[in-house]
Image 1 (spheres, protein in one colour):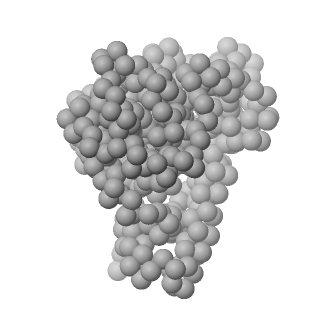
Image 2 (cartoon, helix red, strand yellow; image 1 turned 30 degrees about the vertical axis):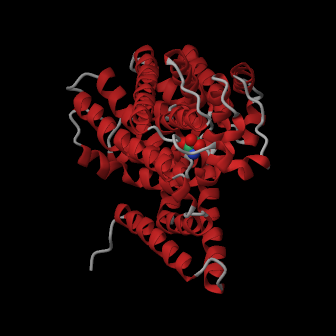
Image 3 (tube, protein in one colour; image 1 turned 135 degrees about the horizontal axis):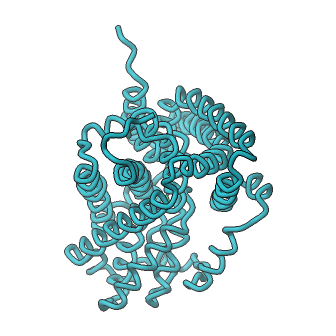
Amino acid sequence: MKFPSLNTQILLGAVFGILIGIALVSVGKESAITQTSLYAANLVGTFFIDLLKMVLIPLVFTSITVGVANLQAHQQIHRVWMTTLSFFVFSMSVAIVVGLTANAIFQTGKGLHLAMFQNAMANFSAKQQTPSDFFTHFLHGLFMNPFAALAQGDVLAVLIFALFLGIALVIGGERYKNILVLLQEFLDIVMQMVRWIMTIAPFGIMALLIKLMVTQDLALLGTLGKFAAVVSGSLLFHGVVLLPLILYLVTGMTPWRFWRGAREALVTAFATSSSSATLPITLRCVEHNLHVRKEIAQFVIPLGATINMDGTALYEATAALFVANLVGIDLNLTQQLIVFFTAMFAAIGAPGIPSAGMVTMVMVLQSVGLPAEAIAILLPIDRLLDTLRTAANVEGDMIGSLVVQKLVYSKGEKHD
Ligand code: ASP
């Protein structure tokens, strides 16, 4: 019998994870078998995420530096920059519009009353985060001692330093060639480690999904059912219809071909709820399966994992309107525009870790005078919705790299 490919194993891991999780919940959360399985799932899942995080910082550092330095060789650096950033803003805008429209149609939150959630809100105090606080904090976090950033695993600061270093290497040209070669080889070694980590991905993903199913309160989905359904439906619409359509229109790649190349990363994003943890796998997928040129992938993917978050942007906009309906405020057009922009900045500023969007959500609520405490209502179901949100985030990055490649390079050129 032929051993199934890694791709298939990962899918099977995800399906078994969900099924075993459901079975354990039906046996009873307190039962010995569920508790033992939860312990084992936690060990394996954490092990998998730790391995991914182990390679994350060296990967971001080397891939961005090498990516920027190599772009210059193709005289395309300016176009790649502009196209990448424009695509990120464009796809996040589309996502937010989907969220706002879905809310206008389905009016989530109408009919519910804040008083119904008094208990949740009583024990919760949101950290104040106005847009100006957010910007100060965001800007301050961009530039820091690179060694501290590397040691603390601060992805955004590492990314900024790597950009500077990449540009310095470009300007230095021949003079710093050895450093570039060294970083390039280091990147190859890290990618080799990613290949090893991938071999246990099916088990890691299965374990993470078992844990998710057992520890989340699925019944809560009932109370907030409509909101959860509208968010999930909009995320699916964006991820299954719009993004693939954009991809098809720009590059001619069919959704099926994209899915075959991207599914390892999409399933991992779903299971880990972290674009950062998924990054090593995303990079591997676009380079190996989707044949994006190294210099484009190494630049667009790490940058996208940090700032391009379609799913988070969509979620933040939808959740803000949900809260507005809940407290009985009708947001006018100007206020909806404010939600549009703050949701985008909140998504850009959210780090690629589980539930990060919830933290930056406070800013979106406060920008239009909504009570930040209301996120207490959303928190209990956040981890569940984070799965789809993160998958949409990672999908946006992968599609971004394909679109940028297509728009920057002419048709006839061969891939490396
Ligand atoms: N978990 C998301 C991510 O890593 C961020 C979010 O909370 O929306 O992409």
